[in-house]
Length: 542
Image (cartoon, rainbow, N blue to C red; front, side, top):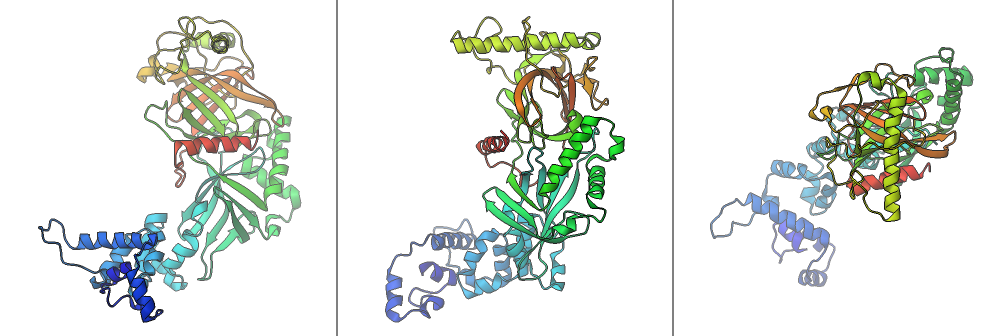
């Protein structure tokens, strides 16, 4: 009551007309005598006091400024003030009095909120033609579906995916991001719409499924719980093609791989492609999505973390998220395959164990590279054994705290002549290495690089110089993620946007190139939230 009186500029003896109309004299007197402790009114009172203080002038002398009521301000100024407030606060403001409620029907206010909160840059004035106001767009479209904006991973078994839900003009659209066609890892990402939400009339927003080749059709979105939602198509006949499954497969193959089945001579690859088509087509009518965040970065990171496209042999190109965790870097699959599913940690890099490349001629010898990597692997095993036996750090190189040196330090903290031992390598990498005390790449100049003879690569157009190399492990497994194991390999940093990994056991090289797209609403609220997200997506396929 007291808050309403202050905002409306009336004295306590007159009270608020809106409330007094619903009360008798005794009720009004009793209400006026009671302290008002409603938290919402306290918040409005504080805001009104701040606004009144600002309008009353600054730097006044000892005399208090004259009392100024918001109701005394011209409507144009109130529109400007209200338009600067968050849209979620405006409904509470509309309950203060009739004048505020009337002013809050001004479309200028909601046009600004649409633009500043959701990036709607389109000229909203054309909405007048359809009879839909900017207030309708904000309340029934943008605010209602705000929880699905951002990056998501669809639950499509081992294959995963990357969905980006954005405000696009007067639509909310879910774009599925696809890697470029194999093996062109440096090409830009492809994308196609899966669904869209828009406001055709004032009643409510319309959800449409965009899957298939027969245009938009009726769909449904359900927000299951925090950071999870599902989509459903209500007209799956729009997904079918007149030529039946054979025509659908040929069309899918051209979109997914950019070629026909006759162009793919590798029998195993043909089987993998057919298996993926059969599996993913089961999800064309209903999908569940779980939120993912982009990895947070720090000034001392080796390179900027983010999303990368990588070559994975017969499985084609896949999307990997590179993140940094103290003295380790990890590559987590956002898209996957029947061997290593989406959500699993495909590579892990030990940033304390730097490897220096030998000369180019020695680098061509796979046995030399294998010797170097397995020596480091044996050092790791010995240090782990010492820690388990409680023997402490070890001599010389096996320092008590291998995490102490700074990330990216020029000293190869793993480099005195080690011994030979090892496990099979993961399945993606680049570059050979040889222990040495100095690292010219640290100063920014490149080192010559060439793949060892016998190491296969889907893309022969890899960089011929690199900045530095580190020891790492990769995850390999049988079909169906059976018998997974981490095996040694070499992580090669080419530049800010490209790196590689040599899988020692597989004699295979994977090249990774940064996804250059910009994603909104994808930042993790905290480092802990990002770590929790990684655990969640990994647990789904473990």
